[in-house]
Image (cartoon, rainbow, N blue to C red):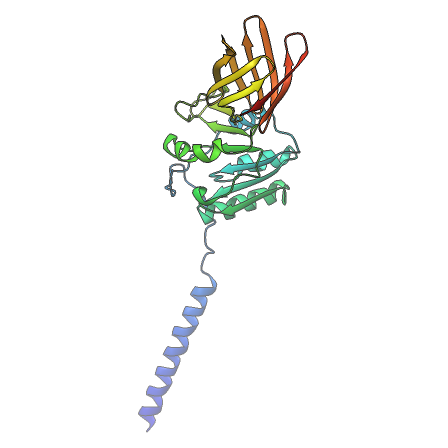
Length: 269
C-alpha cells in the first residue's frame, strides 16, 4: 500500500509539473508578428509592388482632384493612395482582395488620422461598382486594364482614370508624366472618359456626322470635313475650315458656340 501511495504521488507530481510547464510556455509565448507585406507577394490577379509616394502625388495632381471628388483605388495595397487622397480632403475608398492588406491599410489610415475619409473593403475588382467615383486610380497589369476598359468607358463622361505605368493599348492617354529621380514605376497616365458622340446630328449648318475613336473625333459637317476633333469628357471641339466649334454634350444635344461666339446646337438623330 505504501508503494502504491508513493507511485500515486510521483504520477500526480509529474502531471502537475507537465501542466505547469505547459502553462508557463503558453504564458511566455511570443505574440504573433504583425502582417508585413513583401514586395512581389502574390495576389489574385497581380503581385504587390507599392507605388512610389512621389508618383502617388503626381497621379492625384494630374487628376486635378478636389475635396468634392470621390476616389476609388483599384488594388489599394497598403492604402497609400487612398490615404494621400484623404489628406487632401477627398473621400476615398480602396478595393483590395487580400484581407491582410485591407487590415493593414485600415490601420495605416487610422495612424494617419484620416478615418473615416479613407476606407478599405475586401472585394473583387471585376465584381465592384465604380459608377459613383469621379476619380479612379490603379496600378494593374495591362491585361487587367483591358478587362476593366469596357466598364471604364461606360462611366460618366469626365471621370478621370490614372494608372501607374501601364496603358490601355490603343486608348491613348490624354496626358502622361514621368517623375524625375525615380528608379522604377515612375510614369503616370491619365485618361478622361469621353462622351459618346458617334452618329449623325442635325444642326442649322447641315448634318454633322461624327466618327469616334475614344476621345478622338472625325467626320463631316454638311459636305465639309472636320479637323482637330477631340473630346475632353463631355466637352467637344472641332474645326470646319477656319471656324472652330466648341460645345458640351448633354445626352442627345450639343450646345456651344461657333467661331466668334455664335450659338451652335446639334441634336442627335
